[in-house]
Image (cartoon, rainbow, N blue to C red; front, side, top):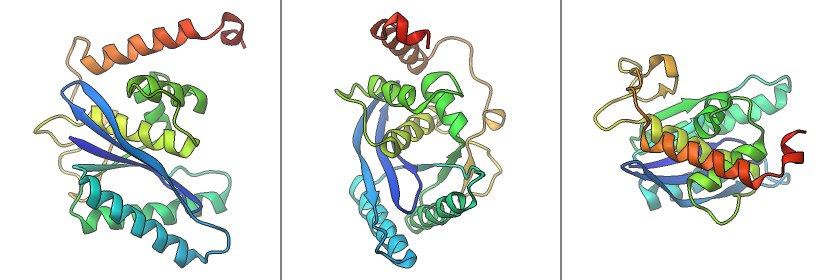
Length: 209
């Protein structure tokens, strides 16, 4: 299964393509779609749509994962994210792809095991889970890969999240997912081992901060 994860934004939109084979994950492609202040809003949205179309047609994902709109105190930021999300949903619909949504907290929990993790922790865990030599940069890219990882591990073969929800969109919500079977999955084991490795690599003085 191939998942396209998106961290939406009109100035910078992060994307990450992840493939899941059994319990293993690998990064296929990731990067940033950037626009400039000189571009008008319609031009920015067109640039994002064109880039997403190219990414989808190149990698042919099975599902698109996108951060659910998070209502920020900064209305302008929330508005820009909403506009970019609209373009993501449009591109997915044009290619007949299901969309899975997750809040930033759900994504952090899915990747690090802690819903309050900072961006540095998310980036390091993404690199460890996907066996990358370096932490993906900028943060928008790491967040997009984290979204793809979370969705890839929430999707089960032959199963749909939120059965009964609209076919074009489903929300990645733990309460709506079938109960998790007892026993450690390969992904959970990989996360546990990666967290242990990360803890050993972090100086004790830094962990106390």
